[in-house]
Image (cartoon, rainbow, N blue to C red; front, side, top):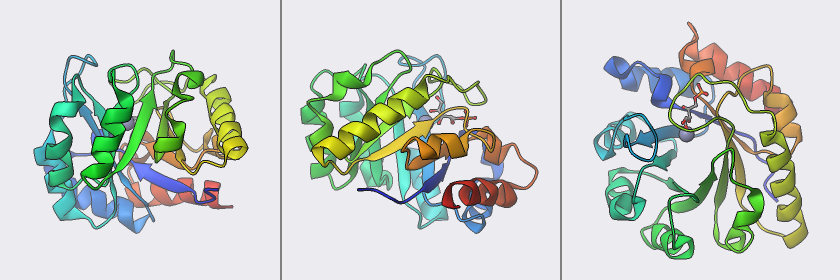
Length: 221
Ligand code: DX5
Ligand code: ZN
């Protein structure tokens, strides 16, 4: 069972004119992974970046890059993101029709494979894929933007996933994404979550290192 607690700062909220320095500040605060939010203006109503920025992040850090694809037809881009340096690639359940094929392909290409759920998608839609995935990402906001309010019912999804993981002896990470900060991270951790994505609570803080460290300490205690 996964005991580890992982802080994954999302560069969505970072200052891109100084990306490598911003990542360095998070590293100094004991960040574990760097979360990269890829948006195409179609699956979600916002556009962010593609493989070029993932490649830039790869040059800036040795930490694992956790790439969250909020795009239509992610199958066409898996290779590009993995070549750019993604260590984990997460696709959305709502977009991918042949999820088993996509998950297998990500692994074949040498990355860890994750599946993400929008707030309105139930956990039980993943029942038959759970044994194959390395990570399940629970969206606690509607994907598309940073700085939104945490949707409370997401905690039930974490509990449900944690229960299924124990029951069947699976080994996937449970990741939460959206609205995470010092006020709610401990409760979510106690519900069985392992990976905590935090965008604005880290990068909108004047002291990125201290903000990262504070979250890390809250879940490590
Ligand atoms: C939202 C993204 C999140 C976002 C979280 O669609 O998937 O990763 O960066 O940002 P905060 O932590 O500000 O809610
Ligand atoms: Zn994300």
